[in-house]
Length: 330
Ligand code: NAI
Image (cartoon, rainbow, N blue to C red; front, side, top):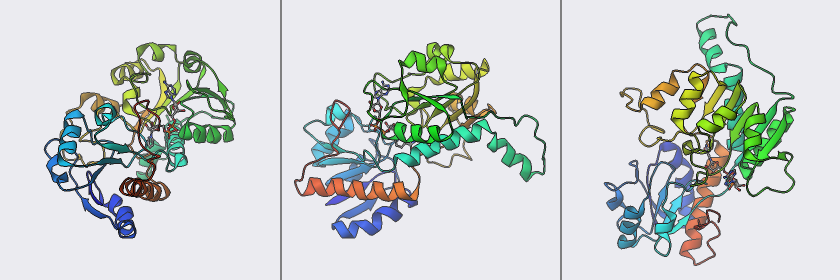
């Protein structure tokens, strides 16, 4: 099987390259993102492999179909960047539903702790031998109320960690899971009762702008908001308004609505045209990271194995257990 890998970085290659020989696959690593201008590079390949900021719309899917590409292999759990409806009956869309939920949950907690205890500011200060504590006071998490939106694999891992801090955990999910150590409540109640809100649901038509002006208005003063799921879950302009109104004690964002072309790239020499992103960067109580919740050795290895297993299943006519269906679930 020949697979064209789009948007690849050195840290992708080190996991995929050694495995490819075991499967007998020929891999081509392309640094460019998958888009109209680069899709022709997939000519002659059986599958393409993409990451979260490669958007594959109907036009690209039709092109892939014409070229005889049989599958889009996602190196991710999320699949909001592929037009799954357009792909039906033309190109298989195979994802990695679970590689290390703990990696993302641990990162969400990292953001929460960092922004709460001002680690980003303390680090810079002490490097300059500014040992003052002014402005660095945080708050205990113990006995506080956490609200976890989405109790799938990552949400459940998050709940386990937050319980370890002695937090009371509320949860919202339209499909509640059994044996979750949290109290399921309606979303509105979670939003208004939680001291910490952490988002762990997929981006769908239903969850787009889940955090909006109305939900921010319902939140407690001094709430912490953590988003490691997808940027589109938050209305960024409403978030900026809320920050200006001093609603939030801290905000941790690993994802952003307009990541394409910026996240995963070194833009340090560029003029950033995205005014919302630039504005968010100016708030001292906001930490933004570059969609890296998944980025652990364990997760990268699991992503590489599962992606190639998906390709192997396709090549050998085995059941495609990780096929993305229109319902949004596998
Ligand atoms: P999952 O599929 O195991 O769980 C998602 C949960 O969200 C399910 O229980 C589902 O019922 C629930 N849900 C669906 N609609 C909802 C709604 N309207 N409100 C509340 N909950 C809703 O997915 P998993 O593995 O836990 O991943 C969650 C999300 O995390 C992914 O969709 C992806 O966007 C994001 N993610 C981010 C990564 C990062 O590096 N920052 C890495 C991996 C995933």
